[in-house]
Length: 189
Image 1 (cartoon, rainbow, N blue to C red):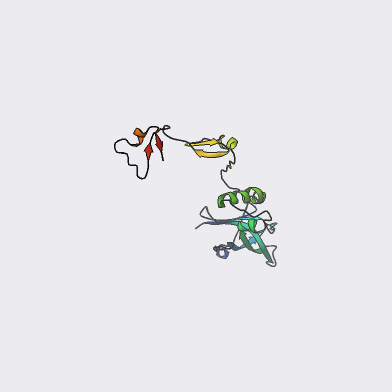
Image 2 (image 1 turned 120 degrees about the vertical axis):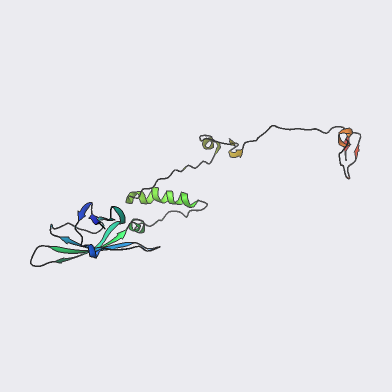
């Protein structure tokens, strides 16, 4: 198995037996590893970290802590790096807007990404459209609905059918069942 670690987009020589990636449900995933440093790396907190195993992403996140030991007598240093996953970018934000009332979960997620997490580099692929009146309803492709009277209404199907019963003979035609109905002089009482 080929393991590689990059910090701030630079491939970093890591002691292979030191890599430990832990995934947890409802918590941050973490990665811990040791970096041998002969070149005096400028490692710092919050730099981007990527761990790949045979080219497959195993962990992605940010440097949380670095503990450095100098290996005497040489100038070589050994950095113990602890990294946190991308959940960190949402955890460091606090939503202080109004409560979401009557909104769908997908709409809330889009709003949070668009208005809060985008600044942290979070991207998402989504399509959203909200129509609230006849003018905006009519802009889309409507199938079996009509934008009318400020509402979106089902389009009538078939043809309009009207039948008028005006004579007593219409009410008393063969097969008509008229219980407790009096039909005299073309009046129904």
